[in-house]
Amino acid sequence: MKSKLLLTLIIGAASAAAVAGPIEDQIRFRQSAYSFVGWNCAKIKNQVIDHPETYNKDQVVAAASAIAATANSGLGGLFGAGTDKGTGWKTTRLKSEFFQQPDDAKNAGVAFITEANALAKVAETGKIDDIKAQFGKLGEACKGCHDKFRTKE
Amino acid sequence: MTVKVKVWDLPLRLFHWALVLAVGFAVVTGEIGGSWADWHGRFGLIVLGLLFFRLIWGFIGSNHARFASFVPTPARIAAYLQGGWEGIGHNPLGALAVLALLGLAGLQVGTGLFANDDIAFQGPLAGLVDKPVSDKLTGLHATAFYVLAALIGLHVAAIVFYVRVKKHNLVKPMLTGTKQVPRELAVPATGHSLGRFAVAAIAAGVLVWTITDGLPDRLTKALDVQASVAGPAW
Ligand code: HEM
Ligand code: HEM
Image 1 (cartoon, protein in one colour):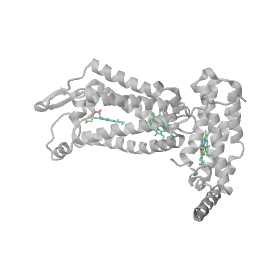
Image 2 (cartoon, rainbow over the protein chains, first blue to last red; image 1 turned 135 degrees about the horizontal axis):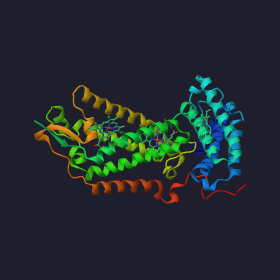
Image 3 (cartoon, rainbow over the protein chains, first blue to last red; image 1 turned 180 degrees about the vertical axis):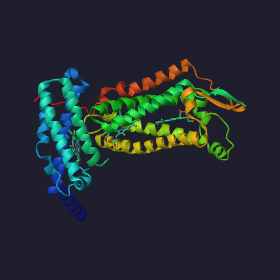
């Protein structure tokens, strides 16, 4: 009985230790940031591409601004050395190539910022074809980084 | 004494070259992503339809197109390797490659149906499974592609080998349908008809439609952010 309690405490402490600390924090915020971006992308895709009859300019502007704001929030700060190994909400999928090819990594990060800002601008115009085209470019920026720096499941 | 004989029926030839085109476009659009992701899905679904068609045609198509006529049993392969195989359809070793190509293309499409790109695109069945499962199948989709690509490379290399080294042109029959063969082997393609083609094509179309549009929303919309469980408007 006692040993079971002890075991529970040890396991509890160990798993708590696994999610605390600066590395794990960065991974967790990183995963949250990209998930949030993904949610906003899905809203835009839904209204602009899949169901244009539901297009609502204010909602698309809101989603595009949220993406741009996240892109401009200094996401690079969540890619500290050593964050290619560890567990946030789940085991990180960042490849160590990210740190071995800092120039490419920077380009991937900057491309996201550029395309996200352009999308926020274009969303304000309400021109659905332009939004669609720019949304495609943003998607290529996401994919560019994922193909290069995110492990396959 | 050789004679000209019909070996590949027209539906089979259309299937083959449509498959080459659709797979080609699926690969290119899959690598680009972005606005092309939706096109990737469409070309992938064309491949799916073609595979359904081929599966059905393997039972109701002409004799040389039927699986039963070319399933590579160990005995057939052994006979072929000892030079004792005679026929005008797929030879037993080629048949092995054919079945592997069809199977792997099936795996590629099958995993694609459940895949997602974490950006703004997912297969029509991604909502049927949990996100981690969809992610795993996405990984498999990416890995399976290397195997499929290698096999296609082997397929084309083997055909080049036949043309160049064995002086045996397999491509022309796949284009024109006819082959020049010794009289005693000349078993012409029979058993296909417009009606059978229509049955196979319509059945394949209905299957693809069922997968993409025919399933109840409550099954397939689990990942949809605009689903009916949406919260208040603020
Ligand atoms: C024979 C047909 C197909 C071929 C050859 C093919 C090939 C590919 C390739 C080469 C990629 C890029 C993989 C990578 O990121 O390294 C890809 C990605 C993808 N494919 Fe397919 N695919 C096919 C059919 C399909 C179908 C039918 C669907 C669903 C409708 C689909 C859904 C996806 C998705 C969601 C991705 C993105 C995965 C990611 O970004 O990691 N594919 N496919
Ligand atoms: C330009 C490239 C290609 C050429 C020149 C080519 C040529 C041929 C030829 C000549 C045959 C007949 C083989 C025989 O006599 O036994 C054949 C069969 C076949 N090829 Fe290709 N092929 C090409 C690309 C592909 C690709 C990309 C795929 C798809 C993944 C594919 C799938 C098949 C299948 C499944 C068969 C069997 C036909 C059947 O009975 O259904 N081929 N090909």
